[in-house]
Amino acid sequence: MKKANISTIKAELSKYLRFVRSGEEVMIMDRDQPVAKLVGVHAANTVLIKEPSADLKSILLAGDKRAFTETLDILDVLTQDREDRF
Image (cartoon, rainbow, N blue to C red; front, side):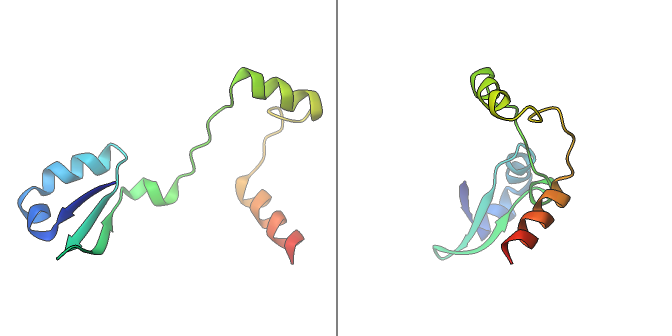
């Protein structure tokens, strides 16, 4: 995560917006105290799921035949998990 003072952000906003667009976060500081965090719009609303390596995939498939073949809604999964906890 990059850090920048308010005056630097004001002077070089375009530069810091390029960082954010590329997926980085910028902590905005005021006298060495964090006051805000600049993040991309999609960073807060997106979950990135990466496919596991072939080794992990084969291990999971050996234990559960549904792995990687069943389409699931992440919100349904989270809701069910939370309901099961309480």
